[in-house]
Length: 320
Image 1 (cartoon, rainbow, N blue to C red):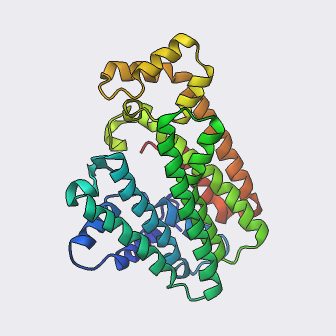
Image 2 (image 1 turned 180 degrees about the vertical axis):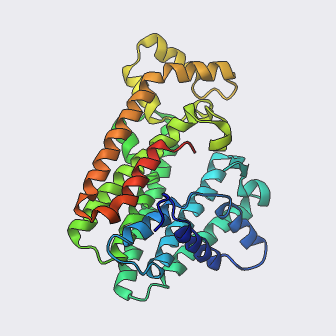
Image 3 (image 1 turned 180 degrees about the horizontal axis):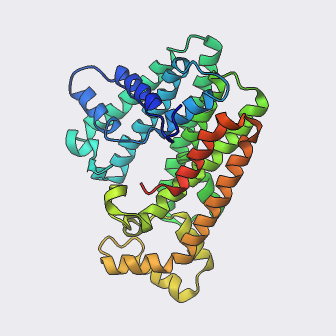
């Protein structure tokens, strides 16, 4: 593997494998490709491949289950955008904006079905069954997490509820990616448990960093207006922390701006300023989780685990 964090050779193979599942002609396939090839990071299939490479090096064996996770991830994004009525993702119009809601729903469903088709390509039936179990559980958890996130619109969740929500909505597919790599590489029980703990932590930091970037990122690089979570009234870690720690005046002012779709840029800036201590809290939490994640990898060969350690660092240092 090259010294770069994202090995172009591996990413190229992931792209080729993805194309094989959505290569047909017609509007349905055009709609399903619209988001799939709009510039995602491919962090989930890449994690599956890197995990596999801890023990084995025939990466052709892990490609189809690795892309199964990416297909499911993109299915969730298409449906998520419909639920949230979002017009833009990755700096481009969302699938339902271009193709209409009914076709977008179908495009998501197609990607979901194709993920299970990808699993049928696993030659070892015992491994295929194990991968299927992991992926089915992850799909259930993503739905549960999304439902929790929607319910948070009606009340203020506790910190524990928030962590449960992100462990399902965002963490489940990241854990599944790593577990799938471990299954395909014949990792033992101890190794698999350590990898799950690693993945749980990077899954958590992935979502928290997303929420931090919404407040302090750059519009061009994150592909959406900075502070959109404030206008939408999203109950992020920072908002929950602020509600538990701010004095009454600041809390009152934050609540006046939070969820106000017509909030001015100045008001959004003010809300971000009010949240500054909570943003620092989030950064510290991510730093600690990243160190713990890397600690769990210590049971593996130093050279082989390096890329997984680098991914953990990339997640909290990324700007998009």
